[in-house]
Image 1 (cartoon, helix red, strand yellow):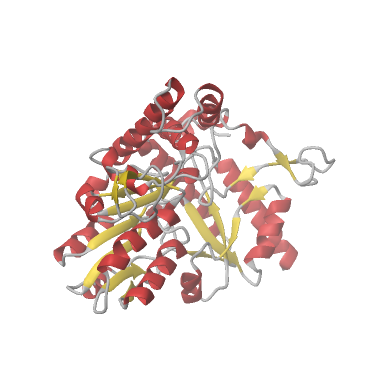
Image 2 (cartoon, helix red, strand yellow; image 1 turned 90 degrees about the vertical axis):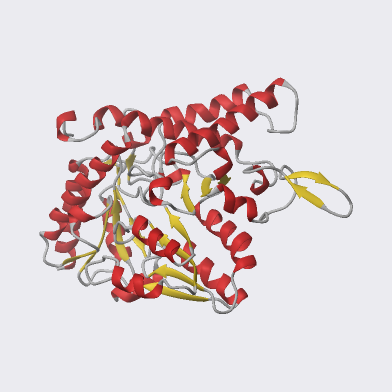
Length: 425
C-alpha cells in the first residue's frame, strides 16, 4: 500500500475504519471465513454499486437503536423528542453538504430511484401532456430512462435523447437542438455509471431554463465522489443515494427548489405528511414532511448524517482527486492490453470507474475469474441496457473505486485480467 504522500487521502488510515476490507474470500459462502480456501484478500472494486461503511456510521445507527430508538414527530416523551431532533438535523446536514437553502428542500426517500419516481409522478403526471418533451441522454440509468418513458406513455408526452459520441462525451450541439420551447423537463445523469463521463450539468441547466424547462440531475455517482453545489448547478431537482457514499442502504435524497416542491402535490399519502384530516378532505404538512409519508427512514437518516461527517472530514476535493488518480491509473494499465476495450472518455476525463471488456470473453465469465482472484467488480449492463445496445455489447465489466482503494488493488485487477487473457487465449 502506498504512503500518505502517494495519494490525495490517507488511505492506510482510512482503511482502518473498514473492517470488511480485511476479509479473505473464496471459500464456502454459506460459512464465510471458515473454509480452507479463504486465502484471497478481498479487493473491493464495486463501489459504484455500493460503497463500504465505516465504523463511525455503523456506530451512529447502533447508538440510535440502543440509546433513543423512537418514532419522530409523534410523541412528547424524551426519546421521541431526541429522535426527532436527530432526524431533522440529518436533513440540515444534507442541505449544508450539497448547498441547498435549508431542510425544506431535502426530502428523504429510499434511494435515487424513488426520488426520480417521486418527481415523475408528483410533478410529471400533473404537468406533462401531448406536445411536451422530456429530454434525457443516451447514457441514462434505468431509474431515469424507464421512469420518464412510462410517465410519457401515461401523459402523451414524448421522450428524446441527447447523443453520446464515440468518445463517450455528451454531444452538446445536439443538446441545444433538442432542448427547445416544447421541453418541459431535462433529466440527466451527472456522472455516468457506465462510461464515467462527467456531464456539464450547469450548462444543461442554462439550456433548460432558457426554454422554461426544469432540470433533474441524477447525482448518484457524483455526490459521493466530488464537491456538489446544487445552487451553482442551478438544478431544480437533484437526487442521490446514501449507500454509495459510505451510508446505510435504504436512504436516498431528493433535493428540490422550495417553490417547486410547494406547488407539487404529495406522491404518497398517510401518516406523518398531513396537517389536518376530516372525512371530506385533508391538508398537507410543511416541507419536507409532506413528501415523507409514514414512519420515515430515521436510523438511515442518522447514518447518512454520520457518513457526510466522515466525507467532510476528509474533504470532498481530496476525495475527487483520489478517485481521478485511480481512474486514470486503471485506464492506463488496462489500455496496455490490445484485446481490452474500454468504454468512455480518456482516463483524465472521467469519474472513478472504468467499464471494459476482454475480447471474446463475456463480462460474466471475466467477472467469475476475477472473483477467483478475490477481486469484486460488477458485470452486466449496469442498468444502462440501451447504452450497451448502442455500444454493441450485451454487457461490460466495471471496476469502480473509492477512498479506501489503492493502486496496488488496481494492479491486482490488472493481473487477474491478464490471467483471464491467458486462459482464453
